[in-house]
Image 1 (cartoon, rainbow, N blue to C red):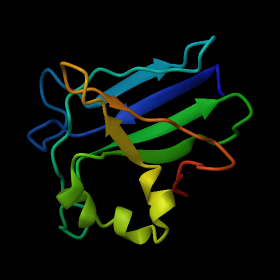
Image 2 (cartoon, one colour; image 1 turned 90 degrees about the vertical axis):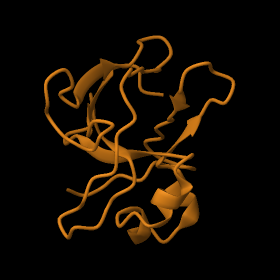
Image 3 (cartoon, rainbow, N blue to C red; image 1 turned 90 degrees about the horizontal axis):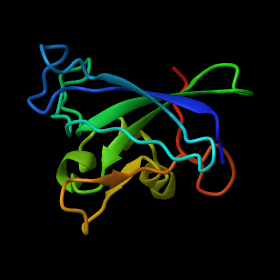
Image 4 (cartoon, helix red, strand yellow; image 1 turned 120 degrees about the vertical axis):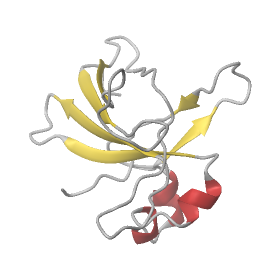
Length: 134
């Protein structure tokens, strides 16, 4: 449990564009000092091409900064209700282990009235979130 981390997200708009008026695609959140929970309120991003022109599944880039972590950690948040897009995402395809790949999926809360997702970050041990060496 990390009680004093800062998380930073970068993402596209719902229409797959970046950095336009009203939505910069960037936000920061501190974890709660008692629970380690964090919260972002944003739009679900659209699909964007990678450097080779292939469409990526909707995702949010996430950086984690915390005491004891000398270099921030890079990961991504994908959405469990985007099965077709996730199946052809070029980054997810590079992760052979299905269990590891699943650590990048935010789970939709079907009981919530608005689209709400839960994404747990595990820094080490069983179920450790996939981090990218960028």
